[in-house]
Image 1 (cartoon, rainbow, N blue to C red):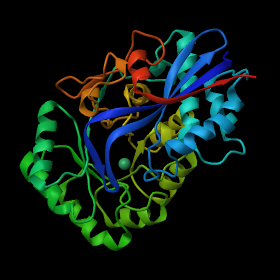
Image 2 (image 1 turned 180 degrees about the horizontal axis):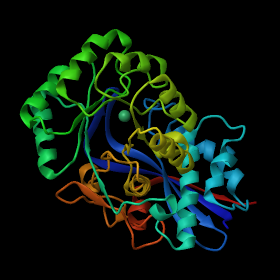
Image 3 (image 1 turned 135 degrees about the vertical axis):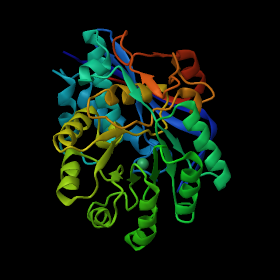
Length: 375
Ligand SMILES: [Mg+2]
């Protein structure tokens, strides 16, 4: 059904509208790895590898993903007859450890290419049922409490259905209390700690229980499940796991241990769509809601997240902010937008990813490229 005969890798530097700060640092422009996949019959699509510049979210970086794709992953796909995109994950996974974001960029590209060839939207091929998806905003750590309160207030007024606040030691209980006091009891608030705490902070994290948060995301180590289970037993607020869930098996372990009650599915983190769908289905069977987080994607990566988030158990708002929140100008047309009630439309009218890539802009932003061909 598919045979890839060419893959082009490109690194672009996409300027951010404002610096993005998390517990581990700050970023002013995003180094982005884009792939373009070509089928032997002429069809093509774009995909995005969601790696960061530094190994502060996962061990992968742009500079590990590039050579991994060139040397190890692309040769497994180029020239091979691929029956269906659902089989690509197993082909990339066999005797090749880790590198899940690099694998996902290729695997998800194969799903989009298959959708393009079938003439259906990517969301349809994935089993999506929603035409519109609620979105939340993710606020990085701000310089002071009044700035955080102002940004949260502004986001809720703009229609965002959830405000996620990055926290770190010294910028947690007091900061979120101020937002709760100002925005009122009805505001949907949550915290994301990106691994900034240990079990020694359990008392402090218990104080967040009084603030009626939707969830606390990944407070403990990036690969931990056991301590999250211990912490969850001490908290009323649901824990949501992000970094720790890298496969269906980790999601099963999470449920078995009671390590949390919600999963943030990022398809790049779990190796692509086949695992994302498997985790989604498993969570649905266990009454566990999921939502789709963001990795500061360009409009190309956003298209993949929106398609995935159209599946039925994505019942909580995703981090699917409009292009204009992050970028001075995105690389897709139309740019991603949301309406005044915080809803993002799932592309329905075009096959594949549903947005056009602005090739001139991509060319202007490209700092290096490499073309791989089937031999
Ligand atoms: Mg997170």
